[in-house]
Amino acid sequence: MLVSERGVPILVLVAACVAGAHGFIDGLYCGRENCYEVLGVGRDTSKAEMARAYRQLARKHHPDMHKTQEAKSRATETVHRHSNGLRDPQGRRVPEGLRRHAGQPTRPSTATTSGTTASGWLPRVDVRIVLAVTITVISVVQYYGAWHRYRTAIDHLVTVPKYRLKAVEIARADGFYNPSRKRDRRRKEELKDEEESLLRKIIEEQVDIRGGYSRPSLRQVLWVQLVLLPVTLGHLAWWQARWLFKFTLGGQELGPVEKEYLIRRHMGLSQGQWDALEDRERQGFLRDQLWLKDKFKVWKQRQEEEMRAKLAESARYKSYRRYMKNHGPGQISFED
Image (cartoon, rainbow, N blue to C red; front, side, top):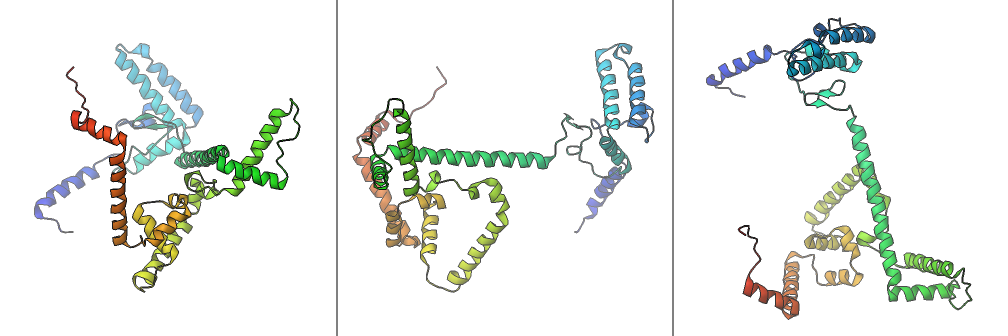
């Protein structure tokens, strides 16, 4: 790195300032004072002797010994901070390090002692524990949320006549469903609940729910995804390398999986959204060759034109356009 002659004095001045720095920082630990000198103890003093020195110094600097309220608060806070900073063995190492490594860059925002920082009193918490608890909570919410969505979808399908009648036919064929049998008043509600549970179980076995309401999987949980992250990255790298050598450089013909991938990427759909589509829709996209960019643009333009035509025929949309033409967009005024 080249330095101009005009910059040399500045570098010398900065070096002089750094060389003359000390390890005591305002607002951190004992500030610009020495904790040991303030308490009048040595560096090898035990906790008991440290507490005795603190009590003597506390009596000396009792709030009643000062006239102004500011002086009372400052004296009490100073003695308390010095004592707490040295009675903790872990906290005693930090000011010692500041004293030994005077002149080196210091980061008060990350250094802690006895729960104190430059911004005040904070509990000592391992960041790894906080991160692990956070990931665990997110994983639990993800898993139970997925189960809730799945059960909601099953409960809805039970009420749909198409799926309910199909489930009843399967139950009758297996000999599990007989609504004509006699029912006691006491067991009427119980039998109804059993029939609903039976139909729900049959629908779960027969219906393939995809997308956001699909059956939950542990692979969708954040903890599992983090554990499998190296495998996922390796698979992604292999996919990209395979695509490069096989199709980009090799010029081979795309397979069904690669065609669906390009169509899904053109449409901006995730894998779950693509799986939620019906088979006839996906087959229609393949017939239209939508993996080709030019044909996809033509298809998208045609879809937009059809949507505009449907909106033009909609009575509600006509009313909305008439309102916008007569009144314009709504405005908020603060003059009233």
